[in-house]
Structures are given as C-alpha cells and as structure tokens.
Length: 212
Image (cartoon, rainbow, N blue to C red):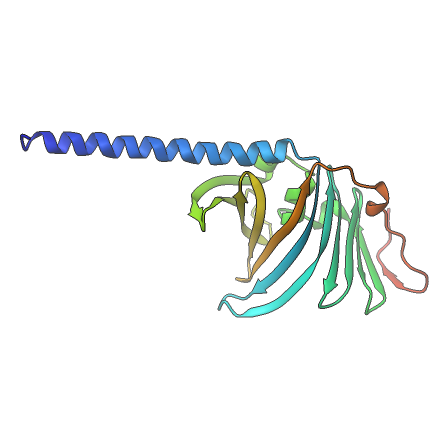
C-alpha cells in the first residue's frame, strides 16, 4: 500500500465510526422518546438507595410504585419505614405512618424536574429536559437528562434501559447526593385501579397544608 493512501483510509474509517456512533445515539434517543410518548401506566417494585457526594451510603428503601398518566402516582415505601406518597393529579399527599402525619401540596408546585414528574407525564419529556445519549453502561442503554430550568433541585437524571424497558433511574441533586431506583417486575401500560390514586387521611392523623 502506498504510504499516502493510509491517511485517506484512516479518515474514512474515522468518518464511518463517527456516523455509526451518531446513528446509535439517535436510535437510543428515539427509543426513550417512544417509550414515554406511548406510556400510559407503570407498575413495579423498587429498590432505592441514596449516596452522598463522597459515595457514602445514606439510606436504602424498598417498596412498590404505580403510575397512571397524566399526573397520578403512588409510591408505597415498605422498608425501613412505612410511607405513602400519592398524587391524584392535583394534590400530592405524603403520609408518614410512624409520625401519624400527612402533608398535602399542589402537585405542580412540588415535582419540578424530578423522576416522579418524568414518569407521571405532567409535561412532555423534552419540554422539561435536554436529552443526551451516553455510552452503554453495564450493557444498558444510557440516557442523560438535564433540566432546562435553572431553579430545579435536580442537576441531572440518568435513565438506563434493557431490551427497551426502563430498568434504573439515577437522580443527582444540587447537594451532591445520588438517588438510584432499580425496578423489578415492571409492568407497562397495564390497567390500574382508580382507587390507587385516591388518598383519604386516616382518622386522627395531623394534616399539614390544605387541598385547594
């Protein structure tokens, strides 16, 4: 091979690799767009852990979650303490069973650019986040979301998909904490009972805030 052909062939190879990478990134973004565009409900068990900026484990929790778009969800924390977080589409109810206290707030004032907002479909994903495809992690399709708003408490969210199904969410906040949700037994677009998203404060508990 003539020596002056080598740079040409290398340039072509680099161009082809770059084109392939761009196509793969576009395919990954399209997978995520389609996933959320066609999403109506989710049901899964979850394992949640929180680590601080020094990667020191702060908390581990387990529970079940149900989501009905648009705007309705229930997260039942079972360990290490029992807590229910319920959105009926208008109000967000947070019930701590040990404290016997319920907090209620307007849902659109609380969620912002959070994983709960992302999954509940209150707004289209790309209206709230900038999306970027990253190299696969542990064989999982990997997407980074960065809030478009400067007033979000979340700096970025990482989504991980396996076989076009959501497997993990990581949220990095402004204090350097990382909250990870790993999902198990996830059911997508199943029929969910309406009563899951209705919350009535139990008798005798303190209620902080008032529904509109």
